Image (cartoon, rainbow, N blue to C red):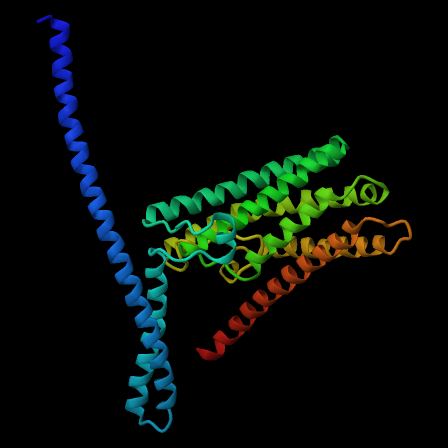
Length: 339
């Protein structure tokens, strides 16, 4: 038998053994997947049952909370405290279990399961989200600078607005996936990305004309400033979150936001003047557009619609930030009294 054929036969035998091993590993993998699926269903049903019984228990606690002795009241307070911690524990458990997508994710992705089953996968996706925000913010900053200072073409303005639409739409999808996986971003800081995406889409469709040219530089200057502030926020919030997570004061899946939250009070209050200036710039944009919409030669519907969007952004950003600052000042003033 030729030496070449002998080598081929020996190599084939090695491949056969490795193939058999791969088949066995894949069979075990499918078996474990089936076991995991059953465990997920059992765990989900147990959590639902526990949550239902906790609600019933809370009603019973409220009914029997009056006319108790000091010892009984102390026991009841311990039960209340344990019920609060139990709810947080269920939230942590549900972050690793498959769940139905919200309306927005169902419209965009369908009923695809987007739950990441390991902490490493969740953290990797969160870190990739933060990098995406930072990189795109830098690109938008550079693009806004070019459009404002270097060239003045409607085509480049359209590319900038298209980038803004794509950026905000992508953020809404990624944030929805992160919320499904345990991130606690909620409220206005989620909704304002939908408003920003809609605003950028309206700006994209605004035809070139006298009114567009009159508002163009004001909008580009605002975009330039907004990108600059978002770069500051991404950089400093990431460092602050890393420090708070290492101290155990923040959840591992907390995200940076384009605004001010309570956890930023220690170390990031210097960002507040930048934020408030940006909020009032949004108000100035809305008032400028409202004045334009009242002109006799205003025929574009985009003028009034952009004015409304900027006004909604101002109201949401300003009052949410003021509420956070007011809450922190109030809690800080109450601390010395409680000591």
